[in-house]
Image 1 (spheres, rainbow, N blue to C red):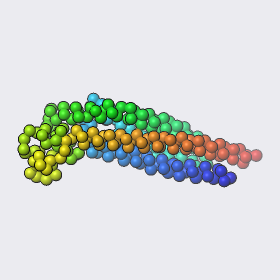
Image 2 (image 1 turned 180 degrees about the vertical axis):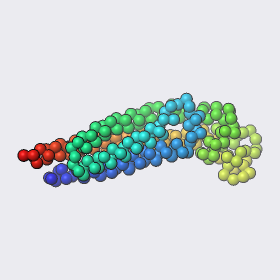
Image 3 (image 1 turned 90 degrees about the vertical axis):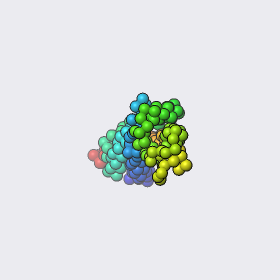
Image 4 (image 1 turned 30 degrees about the vertical axis):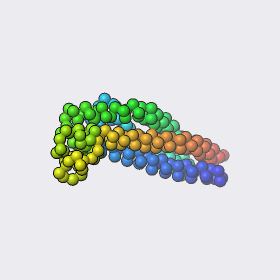
Length: 221
């Protein structure tokens, strides 16, 4: 093996190691949202993007991890079949991640602007059920303790008891909006970075596959 092929082989290997870690990061972000905000996602029933984005991040993260592991094996073994299959999967994943990132960044402002309205409507329908959101996000009412129009607030509004406007958290509108804004930016940024690196990996994978095919031909003559 020449110096060029050696470099391509191990660059591809370590690139896929990066992909495996990025896949774990996407899974972690998706799981973090799914575990923390199930009650909030029920409020966002009018927006399938809010409900499906965490699940999409988990699914794509799992696929990225599996394909990256497949790519590592193909690079080390220099298997033409594995490398071609890996490159095809990487192209599909690259398109999916870029689509996910574009969808998030294009629709994010519109969706974030609707969060205060959704939270206010949920609070108006059932203030008691709204306390689960307050507990999850450490916030109080849609706009703060003034949402309850009394001096004694539910325990979910404060870190200590008795819970009064003096020691209450700030409003959920701002806190929940900031959380989903940060989550969207993180998912979109990871998707774009991984997609860009995947393009390089596809080129390296095809180059190494071509080298493996030529090497296999030479051994037959």
